[in-house]
Image (cartoon, rainbow, N blue to C red):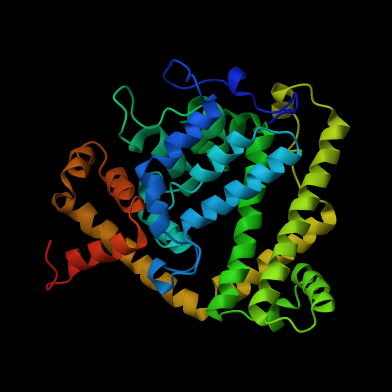
Length: 374
Ligand code: MG
């Protein structure tokens, strides 16, 4: 961060923490936030939460922990290229999935459906809730008391009705202003990471094939380059060589196009960034190729019948856990029972959202299987 751009987020000029704290002698505010995230309980649980595959399906598949590390790695690289604040992107990346339920999107959709009459459930909001309220570790405050810029970056999307309840961090959804460039780019790093690792995991699982992917331009272009250079390459190396080039294509395009956008607007500082439309983005050509890749994954991987079967099971587990606890809060652990007296539905949702895949499976068994004790 030797050449921090004038429009980069600056920890010395941070909009601050909810509760004032004396600054650290050795770390800037964003480094300190990153460290608090890594030491949180929710961060450790990411190891046993998944996105597409369920945790027990194989040890080589990405978990939300390895996903978050990949996002942080890409985000830092992009930030460094654009002279933006790496520590901020790292903190946002490591925290961005803290609010995810067990069982990926199936779990989130099921919990959202259960919470329909109680304000809904949304994983971005839940990530914010984890760092603002649910981590109980510090003597002086609930949550991690993170800087505004990190919390702003965690809240990628937000419905207007929820934004109204969130104070300063929700304001940009009402004003239609932009977050920091660091927040914007971490969002892209998330997308680049999951599209590419889902291809990798999808191929490894055998649910999708190279022949299918050869019809997707972004994959096909890079596959052709690798095959021309290494005609006899074994499949495992072929896949990796192709995927690393895909990631590179996306990252380089993102950096080049974003740098061009920034140069056009010549923003003087981060306040100007907040008033401008989003400056981080792909060129239209790569954006289109990326879109097609996502469509491919949605159709062939996320809705593969084997994934559907697991999703259906996940949905059933989450729904039955919710109903079980909601109908009898006496089944909840003590601290959640106390909270359930104030807000029953939210207490149940928080408890379920905090579960890892395997913990949710075990809890379900303990609640519904006669042979299972405690
Ligand atoms: Mg993510």
